[in-house]
Length: 252
Image (cartoon, rainbow, N blue to C red; front, side, top):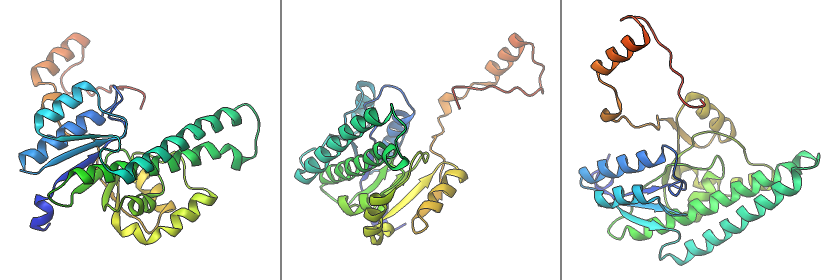
């Protein structure tokens, strides 16, 4: 890593920062605090805003928060187009849900939403980069779309890392053409995948895209229970020391 990259501002993009639930908030706060501890400037960009608690924690860490398009005019156009496509996606989903339409029509809402997310990501990257006035940032999209990676880089003009958590849909027909037209921008993007299976899916669809496996969950020492708490729990449940216990949490 060069000295310039090591000292560059960190730009974090999170489209789910306005939602109350989810593990995105912990990642945003932890990354911002670590970057500030390393002496980096930190900009957090969120297209739909940030919850109050997360916003306060980020502000306390010294991060600059950019909501929506910020002061970037091109971002405003891209964000508006993304909102329009998102609305059209919801309308298309309602129209196609009640009948057995051909597969291309049933896939239309997904394609519109994928295009919407691409435009929103590009707009937010541009808005966040505008706030990094001193140097070009190291940019990370924490919750990235499954497709149109190169097109996002082309529209934003920002080299960035993209965290692809899962592959729910992919590019069909016209979107594949758009993706192919922007293929020369693939070197500007790296996809980070939480598991080998997600990486395999991304590689199968985008063989030219650089991918790496990186766990998204961030270790927090305060989140682990102590040995005393473990012993108390075993005693309460009647589990002897050394016996293995399986605990399923959530819906995974």
